[in-house]
Length: 132
Image (cartoon, rainbow, N blue to C red; front, side):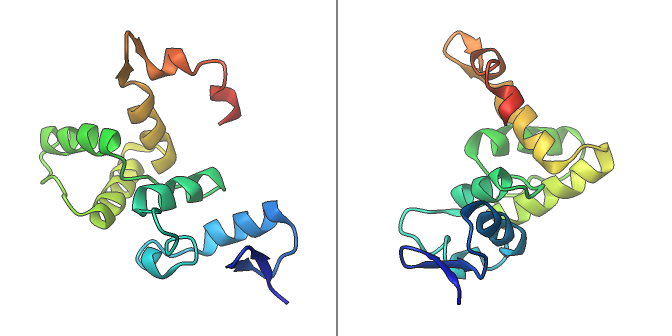
């Protein structure tokens, strides 16, 4: 018997936390559009990757903020920028390995240093960063 949340089959595990962690670990980036979560109307690759990150997968979300910063870094590092979201995730994961950072660390570092109003996001969200 499988675990269902509404009409979405996530796993054969009966508790939410374990089911979501199992889903995130087993979800295929390359087949994200075929995934039960990826098929939900309005869920794109950014949301798909964000959810995987939130449930324990060490990866990157191709968010516009992250992509803009990383494209600049790729160019400065002598690499050709990548426009395809799937290739972007793979390239960023490769760069993280070379830089000895985890992909998720690169993603959050990039996102948190961008300004939002008069503060960088790291300052704005400092009270919850330890929970992420």
